[in-house]
Amino acid sequence: MAPVPLNSSADSSRHTAGSHAAGMGADGAARAYDLIVAGAGGVGSAAAYHAAHSGRRVLLLEQFAVGHTRGSSHGGSRIIRYTHDSPGLAGQMPATFQLWHELERESGARLLQLTGGLYMARQEDAWLAGCQATLEELGFSHQVMDAAGLRRAYPQFNLPDGWRALYQANTGILSATRCVETMVAQAQQHGAEVRTETPVLAVQPDGEGVTVQLASGERVRGSRAILAAGPWSGRFLAELLDFGVPLRVTQQQVAYYAVQDPAAYAVGTFPIFITALEDHLYGFPIWERAGSIKVALEQTARTVDPDGPRAVDDELLARLSALVATYLPGVDPAPVHVEPCLYTETPTRDFVIDRHPHHPQIVIAAGFSGRGFKHTIAVGKLLVDLAFSGPGVYGGPFWQDSYRITRFAQTQTPTA
Ligand SMILES: Cc1cc2nc3c(=O)[nH]c(=O)nc-3n(C[C@H](O)[C@H](O)[C@H](O)COP(=O)(O)OP(=O)(O)OC[C@H]3O[C@@H](n4cnc5c(N)ncnc54)[C@H](O)[C@@H]3O)c2cc1C
Image (cartoon, rainbow, N blue to C red; front, top):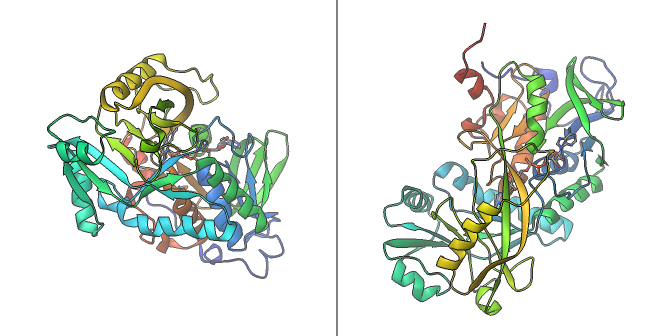
């Protein structure tokens, strides 16, 4: 099923005069907003920011508070990196870094701290080989070290012989909660209306526009909607699509461990690291908590209800602490703090970013997995382009064919 292209009346790049400026949709219906965004996590706040910045009348709706801790975008740190194991997203990273820097300049907020990054795995590991090939293909500078070289340069790691590492300088920390708060504040600065503690019950096509039903009983109308509901996306999609989108919501947790010599783990001395150990053990220099580093291990086996309780997974924490004890000799393997967080993943971990196949005024963003935050500022721009621009967006900057929502329709057999 190919996406329905927007008709020419909806294909303007910006509403300036005439029916839209008067609050009327192209079908003559009164609409208070050009764009209604459901969800103020990283993705939704980025979309609201870009849309308001380009002069749209924007309503951003969030079921909790901005910066809340029940979704995926909270906390003091997310990794941003040039290093990827394939060229698609890697090639977008210089432009994505640029967008974050523009937001920093515009807001005056400090959001991105470069740290450098170490990527480590066994000599023969396919992921690391893919990272190296991608860095070479794109001409991104990097250094390669064997295990002995790594131990000399970074005695904080105790990696076994037979391992090797890539160092790439364009790796850093995004202060996640501050990024979200800044995007929301900048959206407001450009005129967006933001309503928190405002759950959306349904988003429905309504002529060429949308009607959004709020839990309060109120209905609001807009010309376009962007759904960016993170772990709650499945509820909207089940109502809106005639095929299923296989999104898995898993609980993750990050843990903080005290270090013996804080100077050896400071930004500038200790880089971000990602390893192929078990489920990609990764970690940061000292950042949001004095004297301790944040370390995590992904888990994708256990799915959860996004509205359910968030208990610490003791088995996952024990596995993580054992890896810390083995591979990070200067770190005390007793965690000082643990924070839960949710991933929402598609089977291939490719994001869903697309227009609704039959109602192109509704744009869907979901499945940002454990790597989506760095891209949110670019994804927000792409979502706004999908909402307001023509078919050329497919193939334009930041677009990837793997984002199409219809890929799931193609893999399902009709039931009747
Ligand atoms: C532990 C952990 C570590 C990670 N590390 C990294 C990393 O290092 N680098 C990286 O790039 N990415 C990382 N990620 C991934 C990244 O954080 C996520 O991909 C990203 O934050 C997803 O953002 P989102 O906006 O899709 O979801 P969310 O942040 O969950 O936002 C969705 C929002 O929609 C709201 N909402 C839902 N339903 C409704 C409704 N009905 N009405 C109103 N509002 C609604 C929710 O309350 C929520 O605020 C990590 C994620 C986790 C959990």
